Image 1 (cartoon, one colour):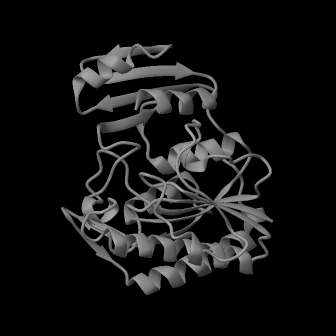
Image 2: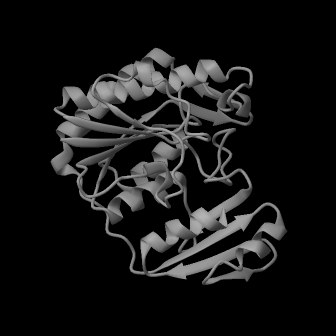
Length: 265
């Protein structure tokens, strides 16, 4: 079994401030370590379910957060950013049996995590076919485009609720609940325990997961906090300005959506 793991930081246990997610800022080392430990737990859960090949993408900010020496052998790690539109799941393809998401978080416009955002803090909201979406949706639909099911997601309470609304059969572990500028979280060790068990359980039940079909048409709307960014993005091929703060792009191919996200954000 071949498993892909994509890891972010804004949904790991205990994190509540941008400093804790930013290299060289106070608290970063603590939460970099927790991010690594949660990924290790996911790897161990996958290995105990029979995974023979595991690829991890460090998918936060610089892409250089995880401690590679802590990952169990023979896990492979993708660090940094290639510039490919698949971004947080760079190199994913139909050869993978499952996708696991660690440390995912609430989308832009949500008050359920102090670090809520979608792709960039400069975006007020990302909508697909008129509905607000999160990084979970973007990555899950990218995996679906390649024929790979998402089986497990850990992160804040709100993103876990979005996951269950998308597909109730996907396993989730909620690590933190945002309350204003604070978070209320489970113990970091409990998060590790639940992630390991949840990944193992989800991969044992892989046959029960069915990939959700993609829509036949996509309307991507990016609502920017700074109006000049919308104006600039409206010059991306196929995009147009909507009002003062939004740029809209339409296509029938999901890859075009991810390519637009690469250049319009």
